[in-house]
Image (cartoon, rainbow, N blue to C red; front, side, top):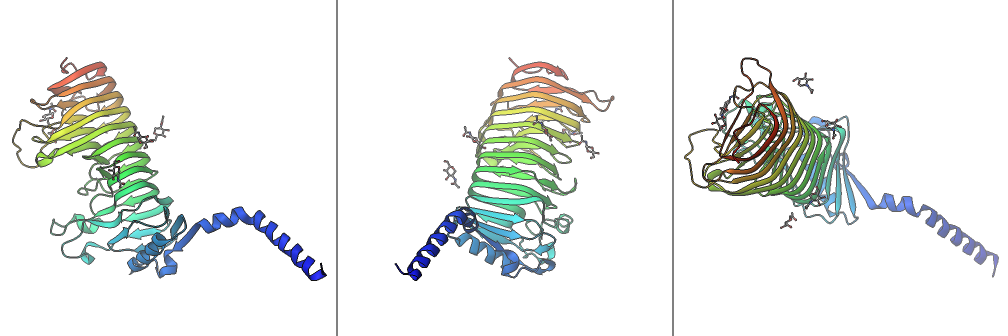
Length: 404
Ligand SMILES: *[C@@H]1O[C@H](CO)[C@@H](O)[C@H](O)[C@H]1NC(C)=O
Ligand SMILES: *[C@@H]1O[C@H](CO)[C@@H](O)[C@H](O)[C@H]1NC(C)=O
Ligand SMILES: *[C@@H]1O[C@H](CO)[C@@H](O)[C@H](O)[C@H]1NC(C)=O
Ligand SMILES: *[C@@H]1O[C@H](CO)[C@@H](O)[C@H](O)[C@H]1NC(C)=O
Ligand SMILES: *[C@@H]1O[C@H](CO)[C@@H](O)[C@H](O)[C@H]1NC(C)=O
Ligand SMILES: *[C@@H]1O[C@H](CO)[C@@H](O)[C@H](O)[C@H]1NC(C)=O
């Protein structure tokens, strides 16, 4: 072997060993490709419309052949983004959408005449993770809509539909045009560490709305809104909600279900360790007359009320606007447990009000360790039930109206 050949072999051996040593970090770097919206032309001055740049970054990330792709929205900047669809399915099995800056919607005047159903719309995307690291902001500029009538349809600020393995965490959602976040037709979702804020008087600014979805966890979040903090609608099962601070807002609602004769099914809902601070309603199940289906296997535990209005409600005669006819059919409510509910109410109405259908009564309602005091000595806490069957232990106000 001549000198040249041995040097070459030595060099090759050195090169190969260095590849082995570097294999891990290299693999990691190679497996996530980052798409910064700024590289796609986003300006981030809050004035220039950055929608096209977001769309291009999304399309590139979605087509990424590597397993993971990341879209980066830098901190310290404000990106004006109009109505946009982040569309799947994607080739990458996991997309991280990192929002460290602020994304704002155009004001109402800049939307089409007829309005829209949603602003930021994620459709058919599996394995999506939205992260805000506690600093990313999504601002719907709802204040430009609320004062107007209903001439334009107000969009939901952020909607996820038909998805698997969605994660949303660490974002600040504020002043949505209508709902802040909607989850429709998704399996396996985790939402955590959100701060959702809109004024108490802002119309229909629900925190999180869920329908047609299974296996959800919502935890460690603060919601101050003008409507429901969380609403669970038909076709939803296996939801765990914990450590939520709600209020002002309309509490956590199951329903409304069975509107206009609809068949709705909701089951396996577990709501625990939540605080309702000056909320209008606390934990509520609401169904319309004339629907069908069920709301069952629902558990509320470790709930604290601070001057809440109407803390505990089952209302099978839900009818918020006009008069509704009493019908024979109703969504059946059964197997609902309330364990450890404490605090104060300012309600003039019944603190606990189970108002169930005459023809389809509520069954197996279990109430244990509930102590809710009136904050107003002129209106002592009271309870009320119609057509509700179940058992009660250790209660204030005394709930002696449950049927055996
Ligand atoms: C969610 O699961 C249901 C039941 O397994 C299935 O029918 C549906 O297609 C799934 N949804 C998605 C978006 O994959
Ligand atoms: C309910 O959802 C959780 C995820 O949130 C999942 O781990 C669990 O297996 C599901 N339970 C059932 C009975 O499907
Ligand atoms: C209950 O929720 C609060 C936040 O709302 C949290 O600080 C606390 O650790 C939670 N407790 C349990 C037992 O999960
Ligand atoms: C309840 O809300 C009020 C203001 O709305 C706030 O001052 C108070 O600290 C809150 N209480 C708790 C326990 O979070
Ligand atoms: C009492 O309940 C009725 C019917 O649900 C409702 O319209 C009214 O606003 C409630 N009053 C208070 C003080 O919450
Ligand atoms: C209980 O709720 C029903 C249905 O909303 C309402 O009509 C009734 O006035 C309430 N009763 C009391 C005592 O609050």
